[in-house]
Image 1 (cartoon, rainbow, N blue to C red):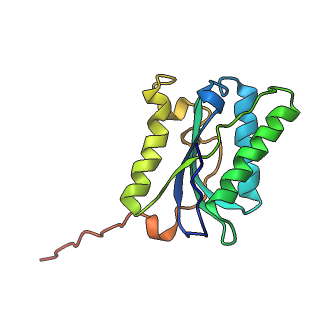
Image 2: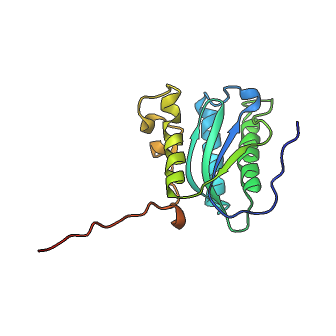
Image 3: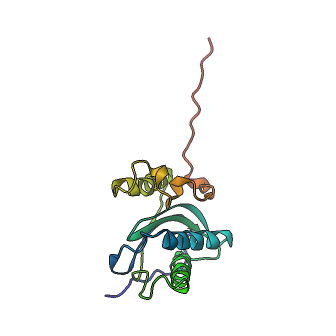
Length: 167
């Protein structure tokens, strides 16, 4: 099965999903989850992308990100997956592959789409019955484990001021 290629750089914010190798439950140990989150945050700190949310599930991850001005989405995902896989192997925590090839992505269209995908990520651990409250799942941005970047301007919800009639 071939992996479809993505050409060029489409500016925007993306909801990305990547599965573990053979959908194995690799992220059930704190050590592996810590490595993934550290890798995710390290590349963000370097300015490779803006990070708007994430959740690490036992057999997959979801990330909401905006690639840096000179980066493609493919390069950002390659850094995240490659960096975390290398670190996991370096810690001698696994010998077989960490990630399945490829990833799926959805380009965020507007504020409602952004909010919908952010809520989906937050509730992923609740739906999987890992926790009752999304803030209780340590490996999610909903827990407050990491400071997220500001929502891109075009994706912020519109605030409509109510007009007050005096009379």
